[in-house]
Length: 271
Length: 318
Image 1 (tube, rainbow over the protein chains, first blue to last red):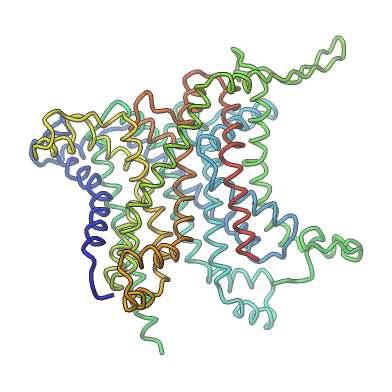
Image 2 (cartoon, rainbow over the protein chains, first blue to last red; image 1 turned 180 degrees about the vertical axis):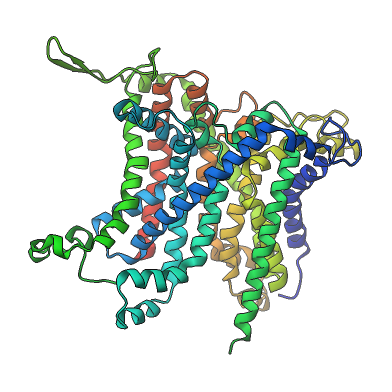
């Protein structure tokens, strides 16, 4: 198709403008000197200074990073196990049960997941005294539950695309099941595990609804603090925070693309 | 990987021999790989729904936790009494507020899904047709918002749509309007918010469907005298159907239960069921009512979607 359609070009460009205009405006206005978010008062880094002096935001960010790190790490282990069962175990009733349950958190509205977990924690507390109150640990449990579903889907699709002959060869050479998994299968599915971890980390860092249900007093995560600030109107500090987050993601995505291109080139060079 | 070991239940072969030497034959590594994630989901995903169902049948009470017990044990008379309160469900059907909220959520989600498709299609098509280098760039431009905070992307529109926001400034500066339009806290803003935040979920499956398309089909159609519009609707769209379905499911499902977007961009009259549930729980502190709303939402909105998905999965595996 050499002939370029003007209509297609215009509509696609408009789509990209729609996708980026609000984000660019957010970034530009984070450097605004004026307190009024829409009046331009000249360039300034003032709001970044305010952001780093705001202890409430800093504490919430540290808590969110801690929760996201632990949740993603646990979710990766459980999700990889589930993905392994789904792609490698023979068909059985147990597997059908797991495959039904693992895909359900993906379609469940967040308000329902949050409410049901909170009610479970409350019921458990009155029955066995655990978890005593709600806080970091209950948020981590909730995040692991929905993140492991995403990891399982990614790992499963990687395992089903993979060449099984390598594992068969290792088995023929006498590898035990455990060494087969840790020396052959695990390195092969590592890219899927890494992207599962990153996705879980992002999802956990971003979750407002479920965390609001299952957190206790004094355990506000970053999205909860942002939400309560933003509900009252636009805030320049949040603009600064958003800019920093967009910058980190942009660096990450660029690095990933660069790495993929390098790998593609290396593959081309191979005969 | 099909080793003969493994518990009989897992391997699906219930032969007597397999049970005979159960403890010797069970491969404990295999069993734990299966049972750890399954038990986790049973405790933290499945059982919670039973708890929600139980609480939806109780009454609100001024207590901690704020609901009454279903089972009452009276020690004096050795009497167990079970009290089921169907009042929450009756109230759900009597008060049209809840029915309106369910219907309006479905309407808002369906309309936004349609517009997401309209905007995503040209982007995905352009990506699929461009050169590999441009394609990688455009792909990363679509993926970038996908990894950026959802909450902050919704927030970006608050500054954009408000009364003295950029859209109004621009339209007034261009002389198109002389009064600022009220856009924030309307249904319009909710539609924009949903289309905007879920756009990558629509573009990516559409792109993966269109990328596989054989472009020579279009050339053949052109040689045979088909106009571009005809070949678009007769060739491109049918080939993109799997991507269209996948994208619409990925947008529609989370949009129905959306809370953040109507809370930040919608007005007080924007009815969405996720927000009703939230308010019932956090503002009214009516846990049993919130549970009843959740159970009905699960049965009416989520179960049909899960059944459809499972059927599709089965068809694909066959």
